Image (cartoon, rainbow, N blue to C red; front, side):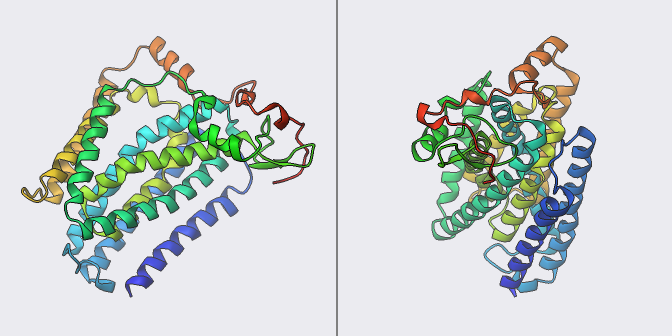
Length: 358
């Protein structure tokens, strides 16, 4: 029965993604602010509806859910799911900021941003599943791993506190881009929404859009090193960790389109994330000695995030500073002249692109 529940959830996710790209967004189009807000609301609503399903599954112990190493009632499971979802969703704000830097550096036209983010999110779902499975196995086998995860979060919080935001992102400085160029030719320019094209000399080459996808995937792995341990601080129940993580990630794309042009207006949110990660890290280190009720943790996390948003609204950046921020990091507007040629291909990799699909 437990396998059936896991399979049912994965089928639900696959069905939603297939409906998204295959029907609702089959044609490439620019995602406007209102549409992004509408989709953000849809994803949040679906996530909260699943919270109801979590309550009934754990309340009635369907498939023995809630009867494992961490006994849970329906109410407790629902609170833990909501807390994990909120933690992952809030930590995604920094991920959105980095994605905005990558897209701005490659000057990806808005028409194709939806497609590259869709495949980026799909890859992130697979990678998150692998990492959550590995993390669950480690914690079950070695209880002291909870201290390692707590230490990772504290180090990440300290690094975030002292690190200044990068003013720009140069693709040619990226190890991922250098690694990709060693193994596969890179087309000198984008060719619509294609990830691979055929060059004039008959060779297959990746487009700059595929490099964007690679960078988004690698960025998500780095952020998952922080966010997944953070959710393990909330609960070690693998089903709750996985489902809360997946729903938060699935809503990340629409959240990007809603917030990409407004990230500068939430400049104090970074400080909230530092405090949030530090709180969760300390909670993990003290987990074998001090018990903090799930409802109390949820309340603390909500207050921390609300404080960051409130401070940003109460003490906004000046219009001049906000304009500088949007100019450096991209405001979500499509540039008049994409500068994708910045990604230097070797001379022999520069033949004209033939018009055949990948």
